[in-house]
Amino acid sequence: MSSKGEHQTVPLSVLLKRESESEKIENPEILHGQASQSKKGEDFTLLKTECQRAMGDGVATFSVFGLFDGHNGSAAAIYTKENLLNNILSAIPADLNRDEWVAALPRALVAGFVKTDKDFQAKAKTSGTTVTFVIIDGWVVTVASVGDSRCIFESGEGGIYYLSADHRLECNEEERERITSSGGEVGRLNTGGGTQIGPLRCWPGGLCLSRSIGDMDVGEYIVPVPYVKQVKLSTAGGRLIISSDGVWDVLSAEVALDCCRGMSPDAAAAQIVKEAVHTKGLRDDTTCIVVDILPLEKPSAPLPPPKKAVKGKLKAMFRKKHSEASSQSDKEYMEPDVVEELFEEGSAMLSERFATKYPLCNMFKLFTCAVCQLEMKPGEGISIHAGTSNSVKLRPWDGPFLCSTCQEKKEAMEGKRPSGNMVVTAIS
Image 1 (cartoon, one colour):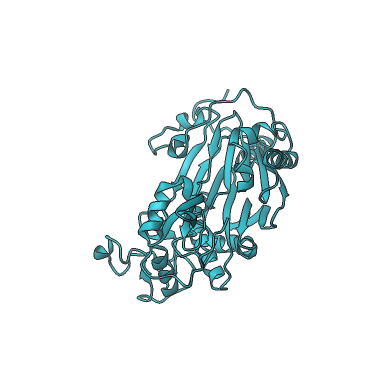
Image 2 (cartoon, rainbow, N blue to C red; image 1 turned 120 degrees about the vertical axis):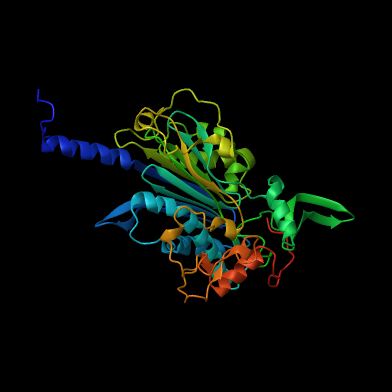
């Protein structure tokens, strides 16, 4: 035994083992598979498991999975697949450490979605797309979504969590109120004689969604601002399922997970699509991505213990982030199957999504457009809070700021100026 206060050396082999074990904890194994049956050819996916970003003197890796369910043509889905990731990454400041990079993602996702929508609409094409976009960095999963494709997660011990929002007008009263207050109308398809059929839709245009990318002919109160949820998983890992409405119109989360239990991600995705199509036939493009997030030493798709009850939706589903007062021992002895909520926001208002209270606001360039990243001279930018109840208290340096074209986009989304030409056609 060494005496008290005496320096005790640690063998290099032990240090290397500790470093190796730490790396295993920080970076899970990501296995994925996808399957699809096509009816219209408007579903597209993006799967990238070795994306790199600069971090200090080296590089760090992260994974990206995207599902784009197009409507009224495939142009919007294809364009979003090809451009959204770059637009998100360009909105993140350089030289951030891992924690800062993860914390910057929610705001960057909003900027990337809005820029992609703005750039696509400039091409004057009228198609649109839903988007469910997942970024996995270590054990942190960040999901951004517009439309009615969905992402669910089953933890290693069987808890089920919903990581996306459903922007169908039929089931979202808050979105219906937002659209009507912005100048749109919400109602069912009128077949004449007072008879109305089908789901609730936004008029003009006839879209049954309140958020999407594209859809310039519907009205700009159909916004591209995503719902974003960010969670930190336990090291037990689990399984993500990202699917288009062709799956969720038929299968519940529980049925989708149960029908593929114990299968590899490729086989699981194929089974989920098969189950959905078998139940009601191929009525729509039906696409599924399955992602297993696993400790390196564990095999793929282990059979979990008996399932827990489904967690409550939205904010009740997650354990909130620990306060700074939490002791280190509390964190070390936390129960193993905890999904910790880091961030959740679904407001459609850019002034709320880019608010100055944002914890990392000082990391973003003051005189750069918060959406398109255009560099501006002092005095050229328009505060994101201009025209809000806070605008009377604004100081010249109170950003974030928008360029003139992104300010026009913001005003249109909020119903403060007329949108462009709109065509009255029902879109499924």
